[in-house]
Length: 250
Image (cartoon, helix red, strand yellow):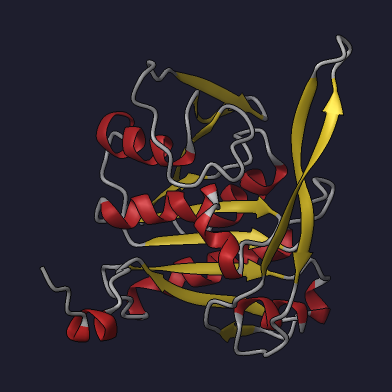
């Protein structure tokens, strides 16, 4: 199996390093990832400036390509220009910070997996419930590798990705996998007004996260309860019930 790995935290993040190490037990791994932090860029693509691919070495050997673009850019350029052989699976992560509920709409991690799906690759997004880059991602990576190893037997439709969220817990405290639905929690946005050294105002996005999903059948509820949440996500956005009864007059 040939696995393409990307992320949105950047090619130097500990999350992608742990993921690559775990996936090497499953198959050949190729890395194409952003050269810097790209969280919350969603599915953005670079169309007005050139993309550059820089070879990166870690531990004295070639690790992968760093791209001066978005996670979705990395997937597209990886598949179309950089990989010497076709990938069989795409895994995006491990993201520092969960990607559950409404957050998946903003997530560069999930969007990279979505782009993989659009381009015909079975795709998985993986996140851990900690924003601290010192958090050990080894256990989350092991669970991601378990899914990758059995992906071909899971009968996932071609229009669906798996969105995986792991609790930041020791291995012995994790209760196992739980297949979940997307929750409804989200941010209550706010902007802080600040001043730069010249006295000019600028704004910084802040806010408060309202976690309302406690049901363990939801992605966030299961993760908070100690399970590795696995949510099958697809992007057919049409509301068929409304479409069947919507009538607009001239």
